[in-house]
Amino acid sequence: MAYFAALLARYADEWQARDVDLDEVDDGMGLVEFIREAAEDEEPDTAVLLLEQEDVWFALVRLDIDEDPRVFAGDLAAVRRSGYADLLTADSLPPLAPDGTPLEPVPHAEAEADDEDDDEDAEVDLDGAEELDEVAVDEEEYTGPAAPSGPAGDANLLADFGLSAKDLIALCGGRLVPADALAEIAGVLGAAEELEAVR
Image 1 (cartoon, rainbow, N blue to C red):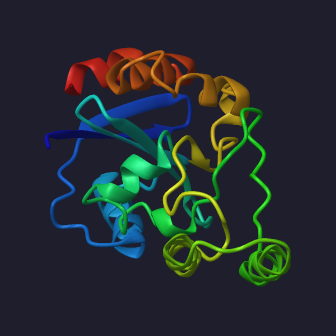
Image 2 (cartoon, one colour):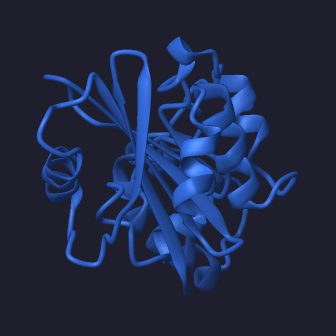
Image 3 (cartoon, rainbow, N blue to C red):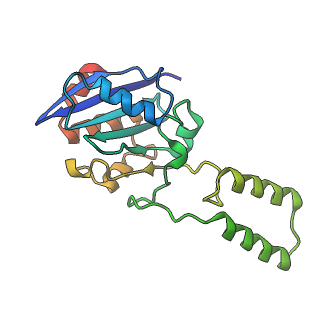
């Protein structure tokens, strides 16, 4: 699938944009180094990577000086199926509620205890139990689908620029195609023209 990636770097009160090629980036650590090197000679106050994969999903990575990267994915399940799962550290991103708060995880041990209680009260479909156990092994923190769909990560990563977690999450879920969602995000940042120039 085709993808588009752009790096917005903020120097004082000015944004600069450039399109970037992520083919040589393998993981999250590599992405941090890539962003720092791609931001030209002077290290920016903040840098925001905008990434979209056709009309399927979009993601944001923010990197500030001397800070760890902050990642937001518009659709966790789609990102995990893509070739950028490792780059966006998708396995460690918590699924989010509509207000931006992380969904409460259900520990694997508690899930096993619940299964044992159910076994005492009713007959168990062995095939179904085996399937659920496989899901629990693959996704230790959740008893639902192995790759929860919907937004995940840090929805507050651009709150200081005026984009609240709730507003960012509202851009997900199919109301806008990823390209339009990124355009709206760039508009809030004050970098709409810069993003359009490199698209």
